[in-house]
Length: 176
Image (cartoon, rainbow, N blue to C red; front, side, top):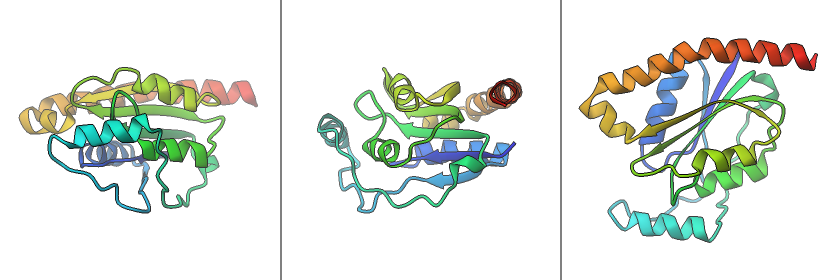
């Protein structure tokens, strides 16, 4: 089974999680990059900046992603949480790339509350089968303070991957 991990990361938390998932599962890894750097502050004021971007429903231009999504059986899509939802670059990604008929694992990284982030992602991916949802609360802190906690999440991921693979096989049988 061929898998892809695609993600947007403003800071390095989501990138760290996505890279680890890709490494453990031997998946291809693609970062969603904006054409222009999203200029903002990296201090406390970044949270106000993020709220503005989300509330204005911004869709920043993103670099082209040279991936044929049809080549993948399983696609992971990850984002940080901004203002209780996924980031504006994912807004653009969902508009630009209409992924359909795929097994999808969605994940998010957050420090406070993911609220409806994963539910909103599911709405944008309605023509796919969401086979698993993951959220990583303060992933950097988890890794730094307790690498065991992060490793536990990765073990959980690998353990449940068998279920994902089984479900994928059932889905493929159903559509063929």
